[in-house]
Length: 405
Ligand code: DP6
Image (cartoon, rainbow, N blue to C red; front, side):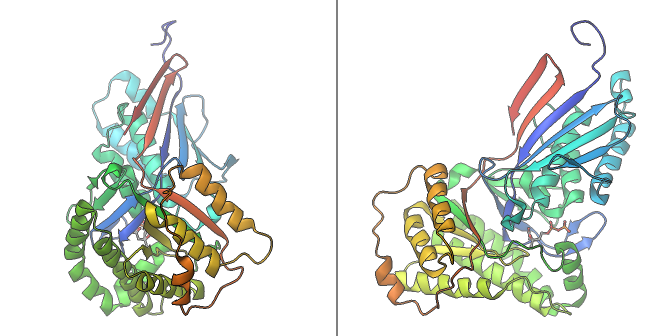
């Protein structure tokens, strides 16, 4: 009851979750409906201060039907997977022993508002942040988990929204287990590696030629290389976990780049082949190897999900030099739009630039054979590891609870 003793007639929850980047890729399902993965996967959650999906879900007996607003625009219908989540949370709620208050929620419609703080053109898959947000929102509302606990229902909802969404339920370094597909967990928090930076290079912001869902299905049906890949995943995850534990950038990079390359080789071995990398992606892969070679240490690592845009990992002390390299090899064709952007983002988002960076980029460039690619880079996004979802619950106008997951 509220202060005037009337029953609460509206409940809402707001949640912010960030996308994650797979270091060891999830690819292929044992069960398409339940989204049970063929292999374990491992990811890094990005900083929700830089990139996130902001979702507000409210429920009220006054709403006539369930509605979904994306970027403030009311959608004609609820997407199929989102409808699954709504059906599932109501099914689970109806099975619980409920008091009268809770029982009434079952007949209330919901309104879901979803907004991304990163441009949809950034090449980042937003389904992981979107569905992890909705899963947290729905489970908080229907299960009354105001402290932000990730319940089994929450994990289940995120997973049936999009497999990779189950990893965005936590910050830091996260593993999702194929032997226990209901489980994802934080292996190391964001603080484990504070110097690690992530640079996203957007070469092409157009949507991908084939969705991950359809492509991975084709891979499991046609690729023999894929079967070989599955045998090596658990071992790779173990090694990666160790590299992160020791903050061993050399080994970390080696494992991450090789997994990305193997994943795209498996895509190529799919029949008909799936090609996510484009000429720019390949140019960049060569550039990174030549840059690391010329530097005599591994300074940067790349990984590509189901798209042509690289996610780069680099330690803070090498960031300035790497951005100089990028500016040199991918100059803007007109004006200095993207150079200005790098500068702005550096100043705004990464306040602690290392003053000791020795700028020996000219010496390094002499040893790189790759051609300059003018006007090919659309955007650069700098970010770091995130600490995980943030949630605000609002039951009545006068009750506000805030918690951090
Ligand atoms: C290449 O999670 O988008 O990004 O479960 O069908 O929704 P569905 O697929 P999704 O696949 C992600 C594929 C990937 C690798 C990864 O994130 O692990």
